[in-house]
Image (cartoon, rainbow over all chains, first blue to last red; front, side, top):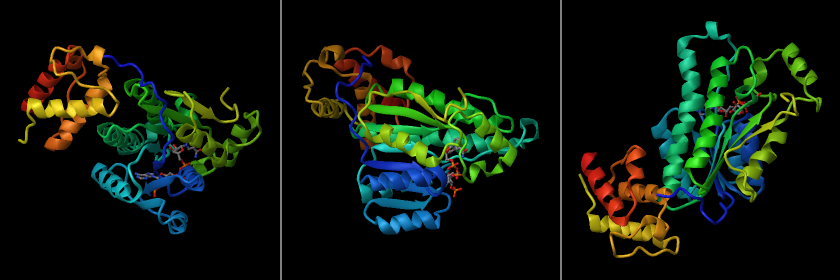
Length: 251
Length: 84
Ligand SMILES: NC(=O)c1ccc[n+]([C@@H]2O[C@H](COP(=O)([O-])OP(=O)(O)OC[C@H]3O[C@@H](n4cnc5c(N)ncnc54)[C@H](OP(=O)(O)O)[C@@H]3O)[C@@H](O)[C@H]2O)c1
């Protein structure tokens, strides 16, 4: 059987699921998509007041709820409810992840497993779930994986985390091939930005990153959001790519 | 288990192609390449069969490489349902 590309371009996503949409980059992505008229389903383990506020402002366009991304059955039920309210999902942003700040030799084995489960296994399962729905209904869609510069450059204290992000970059490429143009699959790899996850970095580490960044400042979530939006909404032929947004800190 | 017949799978296959403005020929010997039925169309068909039967159909890629005609698709899915 041939695997050749579909002739028509993949339409812009109109209903997007954002994992980890309660704070940080995920919340910024949710707010941006709502601003552009997109319908959004967003979950995290805890729904924050900020996400609740957006849900109150956009009752018809935002479906939010508490889901642990590692609980596949809960994710499945959330997707079903979201589709009843918003219509079929045709976009996915795998953003939920947990960080790390411990040298590999001093990281508990259980913590390594938890990082891999949350940052690698769970997004692969969620992607499978959504691709099955889209494919089974003959729909086309777009997937954006939020990975990290850690997948490409070494950072002490982030060994398991880096492995999961590298894993998602690799999966991005193979999935783009496998889905033969029916879906566009890309990754966005930000450099360090201020959030709860990076709060563990000390002042010296942050200063060092800024010093090494030609653009002279730490990446802001607001600088990552337009790239995610472009991949979900614009007509481009970008597929299977990892787009680094780090002000050339890693170049 | 709630199994789909060959004819029922054929109807679903016609729908998958029909959604793309293509026609499924009546002849089982018709080549997939000729009628524009690609590997993702096969995935879509398998997912539609799953939807009808409520059973997941997981399979490895090598089996697919031997599939070249409409009849191969139908045989594969009929057999696969029995194996699950
Ligand atoms: N911050 C950085 O410097 C940086 C740099 C490069 C890449 N990234 C990546 O950017 C993405 C967003 O990071 P961020 O800095 O915005 O992090 P953050 O502020 O810690 O937010 C992470 C989000 O994921 C959710 N989450 C975590 N574990 C979850 C689970 N098991 N189930 C469901 N939701 C879960 C969190 O909500 P709950 O905790 O309530 O579940 C939260 O909504 C991540 O993929 C991260 O790896 C971050």
